[in-house]
Length: 196
Image (cartoon, one colour):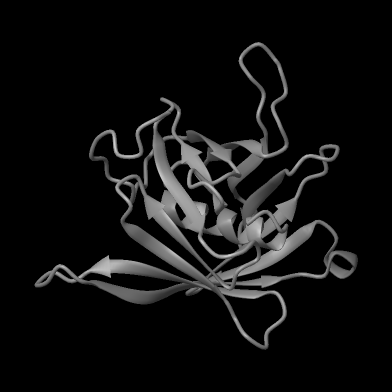
């Protein structure tokens, strides 16, 4: 079994090169819902755990060391709406401060077609588009202003060409992307699809 805390690494990454991750839509914690994210070296870098029941109103995105990066809460009385709050450390204490980060609104499949949801993060507007690749879970996160693909996830294939299970995805991130933001958005999409 892989170690959950193999070594210290910064998870708030924003690299100037494309990065590839493997997303396993299963939690490492038994009898829990969530997902685990591995980097290209096979090390765990993010995990999402929902200790409650599937479809809970609140899930947490954590880094390798178990530090809380983001809490995603389903808004009450708002159908298909989630808010993400990121955690920032106070410079003069060991406590963390919660700050609003993004808002996601689910779209009606009949009306919007391939767009699954709209994302608002300050003045930046993104969307998650469904990609039809058979029955597998495939999607991409697109900047609505310039059409740039920020991240793309599709069913993982091994190096020998074997297609893995529907709950194992390859995630490709564009250069200069905030990785923890993308992981939080993938978590919301997992909630929309009923995977967590």
